[in-house]
Length: 348
Image (cartoon, rainbow, N blue to C red):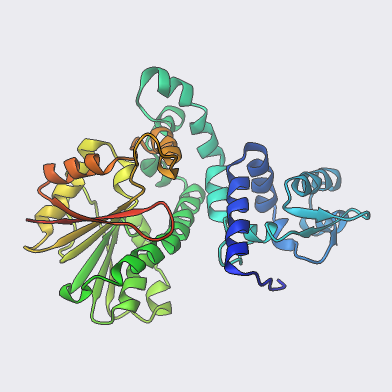
């Protein structure tokens, strides 16, 4: 891949344009198909003939050309007069090797499982629960993933990609925070451990635990070695509704919004039971603002309604959940970029 350099403002504009293509129905489905059959990673800034791509990937030549032509309409590709195609700067964001690739979200949100659940929204609005995933697939999304490895991999890769963005927000907030008061941080629902490893790399006196479902932690992560923190980072499998490891700082990043209120209180109570005196809990979520403000959380809430059975919440709603579980909301941190907020709670 030929490296393309852009300034940060331009890069952000291109990233935003790529994200909008992910969210579009036809653009997203066309890109999903192009990624799944291997076309995107065979393309670059240099033009390549559609016929050559079809032959290399054993695809139907006519359908391949028509798909590539549609992608040129969406601004992902550029076509010349010889039916040759090259990636545009926006198109680069769909390659697997791009440092800010939007592919994980594309592959998850346009998968058959995700799309089928979305079609249940009218009935959910008419009747309330259960969520669309239960209606379409007969069980909740986390139970479904135990027998659907390809979908589970897409989900995990998307969550890891989001962790890259969220980690920068968390680290930015902690620059003005006394992290030295903590000996061990436990990232509950921490997935592959990106956030935990970034924290340990930033704070060499800190130890960490990545806690997630046994299926997730069974897939050995290379991240502790990559960040040079393998001697301070452990992975523990379990059920956050039953017990969590002891730590003096806990992180719940994009976890509570997956669950209804009663489940959230149960999770928060489990952590409260394991937490020693003076422990801190950091809840990272897209907190819903007032009615006059447009905000990503109001769109994201549709995903919670359809796919997870959870919801996005206001600060007041999170404060109520925390109090019911024995926590006290102490502060709210607002990262300079992005829609996420960090709520700090204490055991006081």
